[in-house]
Length: 82
Image 1: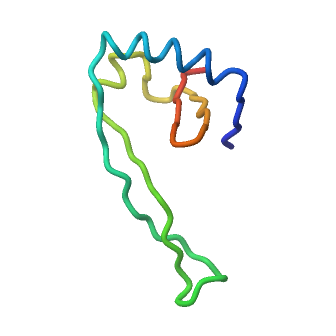
Image 2 (image 1 turned 90 degrees about the horizontal axis):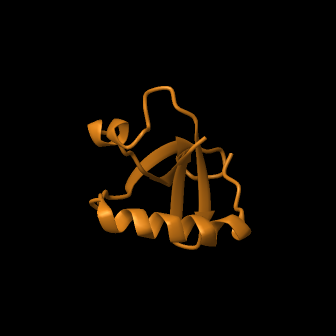
């Protein structure tokens, strides 16, 4: 479940921006995924889909099986290990 926490976003954004200046940026493209839907004609609905993977995730502390928190804001996703 994604929960928006406006009070924490500014603090996390500040820390993230400081860290990102030292690290490389990763660019990925939003894809389409089709989910079944009883409300749509044809029974499928197109939804945005984002996949990130790679050894770089392990190098920055996101190991297989890690739990993450996704913080949402307008035009932003912040993924944080919990």
